[in-house]
Amino acid sequence: MRDRKILFVTGAASGIGREVARYFTERGWFAGLTDVDEAGLAETAAMIGADNCWTHRLDVVDRAAWSEVIAAFSQRTDGRLHLLFNNAGIGKGGPFQEMTPADIDRLVAINFTGVMNGTQAAFDLLKASPGACILNTSSASGIYGSAGLSVYSATKFAVRGLTEAWDIEFAPHNIRVRSLMPGFIDTNILAAVGEQSNQSGKERLQSAGIEVSPIEIIGKAAWDAVHGNAVHTPVNSMAKQLMFAARWFPGRLRKTMGLVNGLDKAVAS
Image: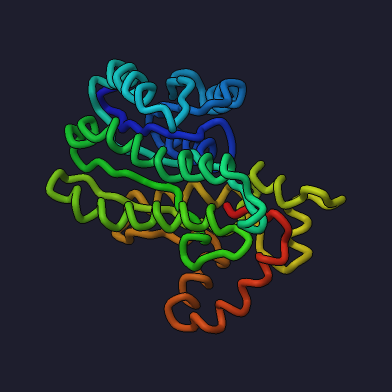
């Protein structure tokens, strides 16, 4: 174990978390895998091999659980943690005025507060591990406010802000902080796009001319983000185009954002 680097992944039961865990463990890392979906965690562990991972149920909203899980994980890794991947998140869209208070609170708690909970719980382990990094999953919806996804988008803007601030704040502790900013990725979260439709979420997005990228692109993007100098890494051409347009053509971008707004209850990456 002493010759392996260590990562800790939230939301590891499927999608982006699973793919990043797979990509890093194939390159010799050891992964702590957490999620509320224990069946999905077991599938991820079977995929990457029991010798390459440790699993535990974790609700990222629960601060006490964070402390317990990190303490248990540190026993397995001799107190080392080279990468905290704050990835757990949920998607919920639709007109803001139709969202319930419970929906709003849950989005904020998981997508935003969960990131802060994880970083506080793991900070001492990261500080004790030379060259450590925190990787946060933001979104293309954190590049420009997404109508029809306002609360989701706001949580991803908040994660973007944390990333930028922490990269400066944690530098004296030799901890780098990075974010992934994916556009639409082919994961289970796209199912909400297809609600009340005969089409799948992926089909509905593609029929509107919106790019949906395969999950396989995420592993290398995360690897490059962790090993590179850029604070934010846009993932797929959609995210890169949004980042360019937000900087140079914000007025034009504002007009074209109606494409996403027209998708009832669409969700981002």
